Picture 1 (cartoon, one colour):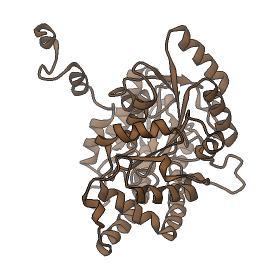
Picture 2 (cartoon, one colour):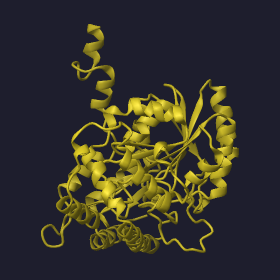
Picture 3 (spheres, rainbow, N blue to C red):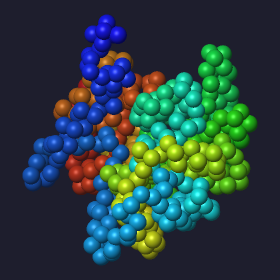
Picture 4 (tube, one colour):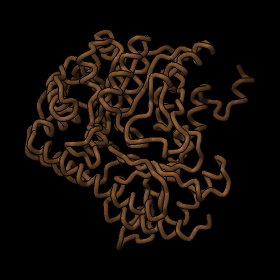
Length: 438
């Protein structure tokens, strides 16, 4: 034991404690903190930075903050806020959220008893995967995908992430999701050959970082394949109301996975949601698990105690959601703001002749800056990322964390700063890259 302790960087910690203390949660976290301390302001800090790497909705945050402020100023906090309540969430709050999801997100009936609340989307992911799979089991995720899934499913649940490569060049992608049952068959055979258990298929819709959507037909096909093979399919709809340029005639109009779940009535189908993105409240920490699997919900009730949502936060969001007039207006205005900022950012990319995936939802543009790479390696990608940041103050998310094979792709979070600030950021990036030698 002494010899093992001597080899640890932090001898007072466990081996897992050392691993967590020694490695950053994500590659861009340190620079995000730096940029946040040096935010651009047209008068106070005109040379400041633009952290376009963390998925926050600064376009609509003020509207939500003002609404919550009014609620707390004008309404009496109920007695139940001060005492313990169900680990899955207060019954009245779950009923309110179920009603909201039925009308605005899922467009099908959602029963309160089929919902569990946790302190943010990360808590929902961690507890759900802990219950659905055994340590060492495989979670298949289409690449590129959200970097933090790795820790969300791995730190406590000890699941392994398998990044399904669905394409190489982004021109191979359309606006619909790229996962097919043919690809899943190949993965299943590969994992079986290596004595690995394919236990969960995790889809984000709309996707992070590509902004792709999955059609109703796609979701149905994938869900039937998963159910047949006793594989859990989870769809994360945390950007489900953050749709871009949606038209009534859109052939790829968003379909919530809840509709597929309602028809299938399967224990293997689940949905995640949260209010941090669509409702610009990432600091308030409310995530939602929706499942028709009674055993899963019973288990969630037990494991969720350390992840319970503050009663005060539950009450505040429930009161906001009860104002249906506000909710309808907010959703529509938020979509308009998203489209305005998305259009600004994509025009800059078009002027630079930088390819990108046409997003149909989420906060992101997945763009291919590979023509600016000096070396087609991870190191070359990191250097380009740092060069852009050091010369423009614009901080993007490097592609490495998204586990995609091609180098030189970056994620742009076009909602991370106000529209006028984004305009300055895009101008800086254009000026720098247009003069950079290719």
